[in-house]
Length: 285
Image 1 (cartoon, helix red, strand yellow):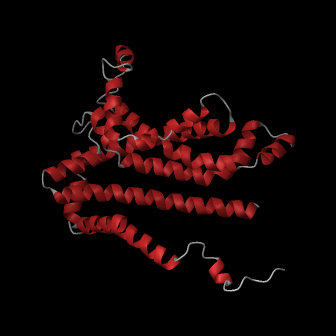
Image 2 (spheres, rainbow, N blue to C red):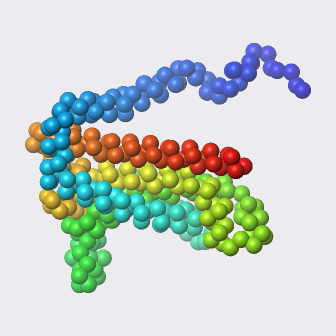
Image 3 (cartoon, rainbow, N blue to C red):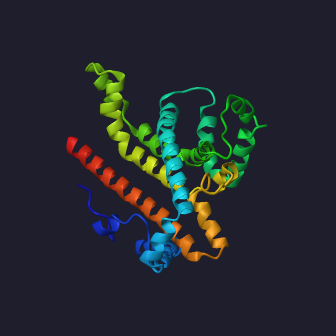
């Protein structure tokens, strides 16, 4: 057993970053200024409205229609991304083919591309004279100014969350585990369900939750393709902006607070399920 280096205690060895107290203080201060204070201000503003006024704002027909459209479109987009994102992550990890690096890089385009630009591009493609719209509209399928357009815009902007959370876990998965299950006679779907899915489930659930939360707050890509028709294709975030333009700060704060509460509730449920999955995995090991 080698002697300990002079001047190094076990407590110091656990601190990888130099000046841990200072760096932690800076990061927490930055987090508080950028995230916690704005969120707290929104909560305080929403709480100051009063229960009666708050309920009147949320139960207004236009608000209910906007929230219903937002939740429905976000749920559909999340289901699409949950399936497609998992398949894309699987393809990028398990197969080698020409252009793989290009395809991998394309997955990050929704992160890099301004959402307003994405909305303009989608509107141009699915319009009646666009590349896709010229094919779909003669068949009686209209995308622009409909729920389908909102879903497509949300799907585009939130796709990378599922791919990028599942992909590194699949890369770290030991292939010998699957080989062992295969030698024991397990079918491919059984191997995926009993071996692969339990390992990737926490990350997969995180990606799905982030995708849904991102869709709830999407604005730029949606407003160009949705048409923003009140009671039909008006999303909740746009309605909050309209209320701000009308100097109805209470109405805007109430709508924004509802979206915030939904997002936080989803994150809380996701963390709870992740902790249970990790605990189950540890017990099984």
